[in-house]
Image (cartoon, rainbow, N blue to C red):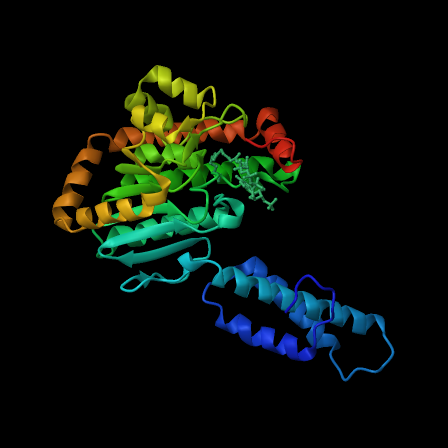
Length: 352
Ligand SMILES: CCCCCC/C=C/C(=O)SCCNC(=O)CCNC(=O)[C@H](O)C(C)(C)COP(=O)(O)OP(=O)(O)OC[C@H]1O[C@@H](n2cnc3c(N)ncnc32)[C@H](O)[C@@H]1OP(=O)(O)O
């Protein structure tokens, strides 16, 4: 169908779209499903053999039929343009996720952030799905787990919509619930029982940078950048970075990132110890996956026991740091500095 024209779609196009929607491989998500359902009902409620006169009901029906058909067409094109949502030979795809794509192949479970159109920003659903995926990966037959991003970004960090459309009377609850969610989320990284490797395919922002300190290896494309603009956003560090970053890179360097918003190139992040190794973007996926496949053929239990031993020295401390960071952030989210930063982003005044 030509989506640029304003032509009316026929009842036949509409019926074809109803069939296509059933064949989508990727769940389009509740929001989209509700939109489709509402449009479908509008057509269903008003559909009857048409008289030549145009009534308001008929034109509403045409409009809903057109919107439904266009929405399905965009879902079908997005799916066929996105080869990464297809599994490759030998790869098994784990069930029911909307915001991440979870697959296992060659003893590696890959958790891929999958909101490329939003630069893989993490909304509430995605926080929960990442936790679920980590729980499953911790228990499945894989030897190692990998976190990576779909599209040009690794992740733009917390989805700022998590702070949008909150009534003043609900602000405190939002901050309290956010702190509970964040503590549980970071806790999953602290407690993850197997080697966890970050494959940073592009720019990383905010919480997706700080969490790298809790990963066991970090491989980065030379296109990746690392930016934790907490003071710019009126916020404070999380992901145990207030403890791990000074330990990894020294206090002076950690201060530049966590206090003064310094954006690192991949080469700088590697020199400062946050990244294990940097690869040219043109060969990044090939080189990294070949390396990881070799690592994943090592004895699985030995790797898990060794990872847990290394982590055990710090685990209690990391949970205490996580609690403290969430407590401070809960306060920050109610500050004028933070609220103004979020408003500026949505007014398109302030991008990073
Ligand atoms: C339960 C709460 C726990 C909170 C934990 C604490 C976590 C803290 C952090 O992670 S702080 C970091 C927060 N992230 C940001 O501030 C990044 C904001 N985004 C940007 O500045 C820019 O989008 C960009 C520099 C990442 C990319 O710029 P550009 O290449 O020009 O792309 P667009 O801006 O057009 O982005 C495309 C599309 O995605 C939407 N989007 C991108 N990032 C976010 C985001 N973090 N939150 C919400 N939405 C985001 C952007 O609005 C565009 O949407 P549109 O197409 O306009 O609908």
